[in-house]
Image (cartoon, rainbow, N blue to C red; front, side):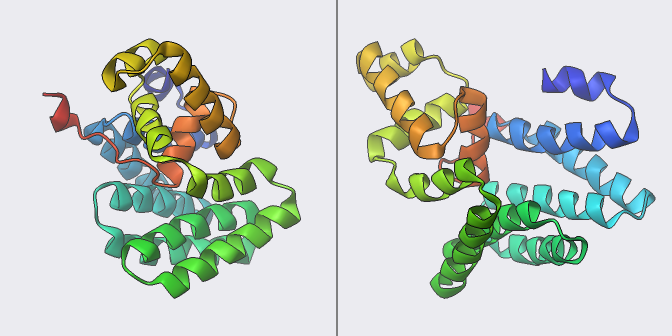
Length: 213
């Protein structure tokens, strides 16, 4: 669906929305080339239109790519640029999402103090906005069991519950329960939303297209 949207949607404002979604979705399924293409186009639109908002969205998308590619050192400068834009124009929800990613990057770089501070600020913003799904996601992500993380990593690939059960040598009913628990902890109600949360919070490693042979 996202690839069809990329091919069909040409209206500039709508195109930006589709590209931003494409970065998250294609990254989650291991389409490295598609992800890079969407991110590059998003950046180009931001530069052409001299739009700080689009540039901030592009910076967020690039930071997601940095983290997925194992380059956490490249993410903080992009995210801090985005955060400055969100602060300047008064976009607290986008600011909080960027801070969540910044906290993840700092944690990977061994900067626990900054990571905790950014997580705290993000939590305060989500609480003020009443963004309950994001709060549950922020808190619930730390509560996933090892098995739930394994199941989530397969959900992200698009595997059905039956396929997951076969892969992990579990009953399908057990997988159903794990998926339900994951949804509750992440504050989502669909596999697509769970995939987006997993990517945003870097809960599972993304698949590289090269791994598909």
